[in-house]
Length: 57
Image 1 (cartoon, one colour):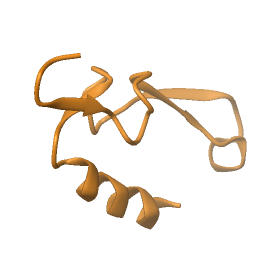
Image 2 (cartoon, rainbow, N blue to C red):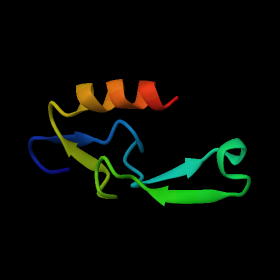
Image 3 (cartoon, rainbow, N blue to C red):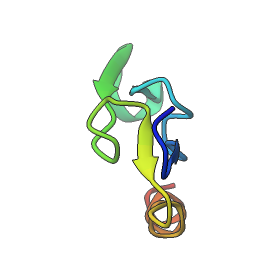
């Protein structure tokens, strides 16, 4: 892990997210837009990500 970065709070470091079947009516995997599929985000960005994730759910 790079210095000053943490594991992405949205995709948990995987770089990809699974879309729930109820939402897409099929199995769908998408790239994480928060970390650009890198799995890491700069420190300090996790607070914003947590608020955004809560509003999505």
